[in-house]
Image (cartoon, rainbow, N blue to C red; front, side, top):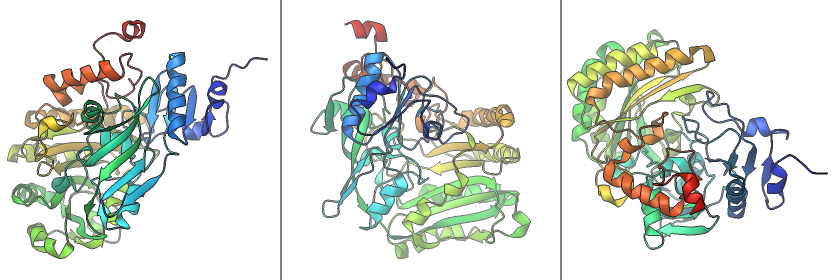
Length: 469
């Protein structure tokens, strides 16, 4: 008797768990962070080893099935799942090995940033990582990876020393500055276009376990004045200062004055990337802006890394943007506040309208050193719309897009692909010269575009033509 379940053929050469639509646990395994994404893979390959990843890639290639790769499942665009293809789930690749003397860490492709931070902080070390603990290493790092400490230590991809990569032909290579240097250049900012990364090796930096960090909060009526003061402070601050501003709905927490509960407020977050006692003078200008909530204090680095988790729960509907700005002018501030307050008033209390101060440590890395681009930007505009009901999709997405359109005159025209939900912005993210170099890499490592469920860099020839060559 023959079977029609395609998963059976994969199970014969697989040590992890293979789920088809009829298996228990399939529906839970296909869920991703953004509840707007509801897709049904033909096969979910829950890999336990690099050999499992190889088997899943070969299985998909042999049958002409699309591949989606999932680590943390946080892709707002839904690129970590698929319909009718193979979902390569890396969540079983959880190994973490720290070398405190060399200040390096090796981590499996399924490790989440909260897990990585806990392991490295046990040695007083860290690498710039995701600001939400359930974010996976993979998509974050290969897309660039802005973390709080990027102001001092650069992007996550700037701290990548090597990576184990499963290529489209099923071979496994180690990419670094010494081996497969062209591939190493491409995976640092080029996303998942060239293979599946099953292990990362990061450079680590001393920090913590205690840092000076926290959140301040201001009534929205004072926001125009406060934001101008914040900008002037941030622009002149040392590289050790990480900071961002956010318009959000004040939560009904004990530390928030009752008169602000449920109302739009301006929040300003800060972290000093160094010994806490060295940071007091650096953050003093923020406290002198007279916040009504001042939670700047020594705290565990892992606590600050987890501070945004309550604002980013699984199972909510999400739409984000990531747009670069070289500077934050007075007119940009006024435009930002006018639209941010309106968007937070749409009845979605978890929405946050963010501007991150970047540049600094990111800009010190030469632009040509990695595929990642636009290192000269001073700020990143990041409106995050979060809501619960499907009936609100149209108005929430339309409001976010209108906000981005209003801010466009102040942008560089480029986008940060990790925060970009739509296709069509890929060339903008790299520019013509880098995009051509990335296309040549695609031709070499994935000419049939097997890895196309990503912010896709298309090979120079159609997939059918490449497959026949």
